[in-house]
Image 1 (cartoon, rainbow, N blue to C red):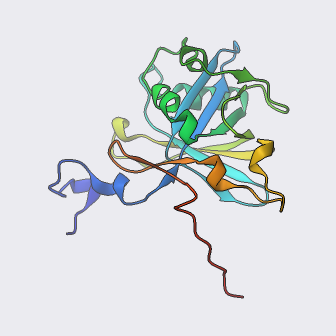
Image 2: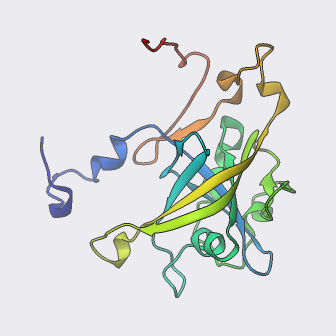
Length: 207
């Protein structure tokens, strides 16, 4: 089949685009507003984009607040800081709960029973139940050209200035045991996947 996304002429029950670029890692972004109120939200339009300096991105869609922004975007642009907490199999259910649309005075971390723990270099707390945390400084926000207000996305770039890794994820060889971490990725529709020992394989890059 062939279709043009802007024409929405795919003829399927749902737009298949989100089911083609998969799996997508999930950035569980914690931030705080100017009063210190914590916000926690998952973003599947998320990834690492370069190595030196280590940099990540997440794309924030339209929000329901008067300014049209999601709380994460507003907080990051206001304070210049955020934390990316890596979602794993053990935290998948509570990650999903924090995706709900809630009033901006709701602390999602407290609402779903997660434990806030202080960061080293930024103000937003980390999710103690997550095994990996990336403390980030906001670099820039880029509004993506869009077809209408409902389709508005803003790309948020952050430099990773501090990294926390749960000690038991580091092997005797000094490598990260991804199979032990069991990170979760987003597929399309309501589907997810996990990285496990059975799904990992190795290939050596040619010189």
